[in-house]
Length: 264
Image (cartoon, rainbow, N blue to C red; front, side, top):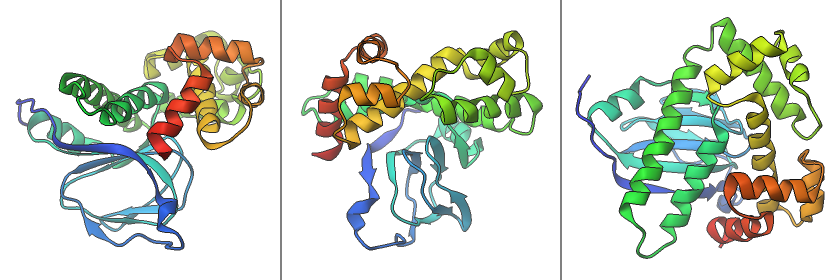
């Protein structure tokens, strides 16, 4: 493995809605020229990389390598990175699984959104672009390495907990509820989850609620009060407080920014 850290070049990134292809159900097969990372925003059908099929799932990551043949069944929505890189970073990315679930969804969303916002600026600071890109890649690498341990009992317990949270974050769930789903005691589960994901179960629930609310803010005309109720915040004021604490922005401003960044 090379010990040289080289920064990515030929960088492209953004949000893509495949529904623009209309009635097309399968994209044409092509050969990747660069490293490509897809972060899927919704469940879909199948994507193919060198003949291997992967089911498109929300908050899952696909890492494509140069020279691979690929295509996908449509439609789906995704955020993507395309870049050229060599040295140790290329070796690390090549060693990761091709497809895996994202654990650090809040951090991934945050840095992706920052990149997309910077891309809309005429004179964006290149250091900010590289900083957000490297942070984003770091979380993808962490999650890819964690998924390689998916056969262990620890990883299975964490995955059970994540699945429970994804299914119930719109409700008022307790730590004991999540621990029970993972077949662990609350205290041990809290320590285990935190050590393997880097965040507490409470923070993960909050991230899921934020992600769900952001999607509804971007894709629907529901009121902020309705979204707060649907995403488990309990009240519009609490959701506003959480957004300002975690995103430094109000839900209304987030809705405006998302629509400008993704849909205009």
